[in-house]
Length: 121
Image (cartoon, rainbow, N blue to C red; front, side, top):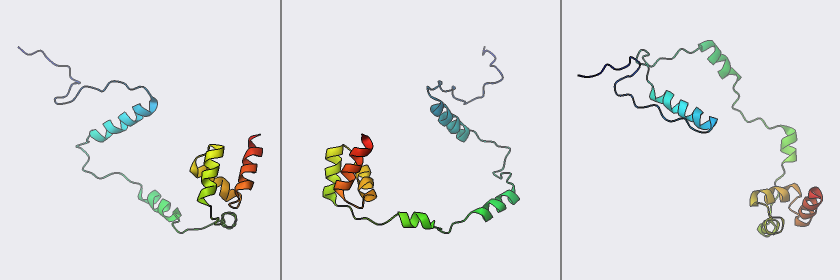
């Protein structure tokens, strides 16, 4: 004869996953389990505050506004690939950091090297 099951067990439900180590893993697992759950009482419609949504949409600004200070400070500087490889090999920087350093010093490798050395010391 079959033994009675506890009332909190549902047919077809899988065992609860083992607890994970980090908080980030637990958050991800909770998000995945929330995706798995279905609320059959809800017919797919969500309660949305339409006035708040309308206000939020009005406050969105999709046009590109550039700050004049940022536009002035960001000049287009051509960087020589040989200078980038020089900084990468001598200063042990990544290519991206070497390019940023060169752009900050108008593409001049000597200025970039001396600025890096004096900033490090």
